[in-house]
Image: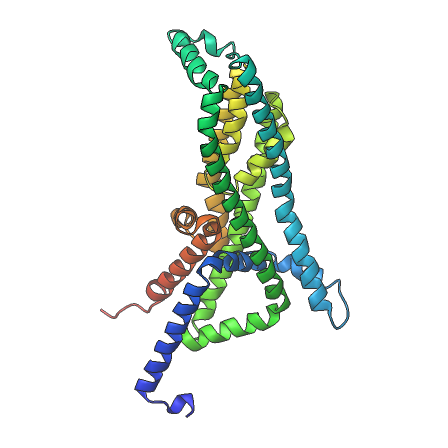
Amino acid sequence: MPPENATLAQKTARYVLIGALVLVGAWMLRHFIAALCWAVVLAIATSSAYDRWLARFRGRRRDVWASLSFTAIIGVVLLGPLIYGGVIAGREAIAIVRDFTAAAGTGPPPLPSWLAQIPWLSRWVRDFWVEYVGSAGGGTAHMHASPVVIEWTRVVGEQVARRIVTLVFTLLTLFFVYLNRDRLSLQVPRMCRRLFGSAVDRLLGRVVTAIRAAVDGIVLVAVGEGGVMCGVYALVHAPHPILSGVVTGIFACVPFAAPIAFGIVAVVLLVRGSIAGAIVVGAAGLVVLFIADHFVRPVIIGEGAKLPFLWALLGILGGVESFGLVGIFIGPALMAALVSLWRGWVEEMPADGG
């Protein structure tokens, strides 16, 4: 029976079946939804760059080779900093293990000179250092700590493995999105029009624009934060200022995560005895973070997505809290859709006659 000749009960049953299938499919793919969302965000954000890349290829298989090579480039861009950071972290971990191994035979490492000179607290700090840091070098404490270290290593390993699997499926999905982009760009709007009417075109346009604006805001602000903090690190003679600035920029992609990076640098300077340098890094980092996350980033995203400042900020923070890192892009897109609906229903409705 043609769909237009179906009865109301048949139409209702059909939509219930469609809804049930969608829910079951979403539940089955629940562990891969993050990868699918990342693939869609990356495809939207890099659409202009992919157009220029695709124009370089000729022949019958140009779509396949362009999709495969561009996906490989995205993978290198994402994996490169992670691999490099992992190597650096591994070296630092080995150095820490060597320090504790040396402390097992020679006792606790000496207190930093500035820490031992704190008025009223020097005796308590010295006792605490000897009791807890010194006992870590002993055989008994080391044996008791081993199960904890093993459990911590297992948890970290599981999280790393899960992230690697997510990244692999993200790149795999991204390849097929690039490969079938023309078909998807026609089928998705057509399906949405059939479900919600022609007014959904403007809604989809706002969502895509919001995702692109979110990517621009996140990347530009992160690069700016990393560059400013790199200069601050060099000014106070922090170790590896360029590397520390790059790490700070990577952490700055997540709202309010940059303090982890510049906080570690401040602690390193503090342990080395550079109190002024640690204070400068901490103060400069907090100021840059406050300005970037509360003003610059929401303004860039808000202007691109046509969102008021407050809703752009709430979209970023609410998206991160609800969806994790990918929520940085999903949150503003959802807020743009909601604001578009509000404007369509309220501001553009004809005024009631009085």
